[in-house]
Length: 262
Image (cartoon, rainbow, N blue to C red; front, side):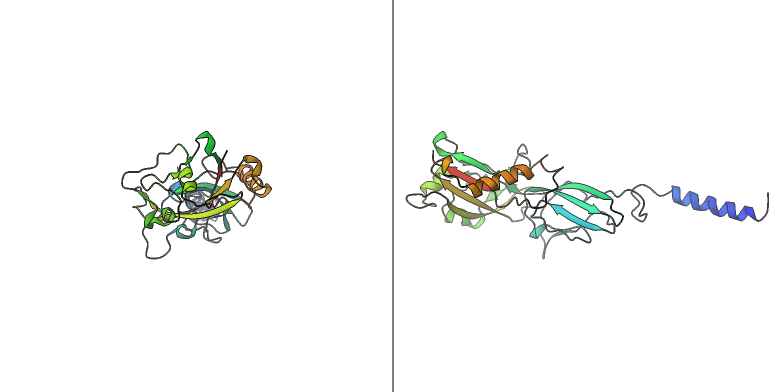
């Protein structure tokens, strides 16, 4: 063999061996597929001296974004500011590489929410139950948990059960939240502070709930119907609802708890 070709072949062999030894998840290789992950599909709030930040397990150049509205994410690094985000919801995180390649993942910011729903009191539908970790079938751990910390909601008349977070809407009406003689389209917002005995270590979490009162379904105004239709069309931000959503205008908070007298 030509003596000049021997070192060239050796060098090429070394380069090929080095290239093949890289794994698909090697983040130093910009060509390999990017596995966008935050280490777990559920991110829990944690005790922190400042804002609690969770970053992707690996980062790539490009742009990061979250859907729906409510998640605070660094567009350059993909870091999620859990302390400043709306918790209890499921989000889609998207990374767009400089070459246009899109990579997506789903994460839940742990906490509770309430589904947007009509509650008709005359049909004995008067209890609004919290949804835990964006999945209606997931069991909310109650032992050691507490709801309405500081008595903020109950102090304002919103009847939140401190042991399970359920809102008694009939009692809320009787408490005079909507006035002694409720009028159509009265809207009241309440903040519920709570601690869940889960992986969050009972870190305080917060949720604002918007309550409406109407005499009949016919009295519900067009703007509220539009809000509900938008949320249904764009996803209710619970399990299995937003994988294919692309519209960036959806705003899932505050949840709309709509009380219908009869």
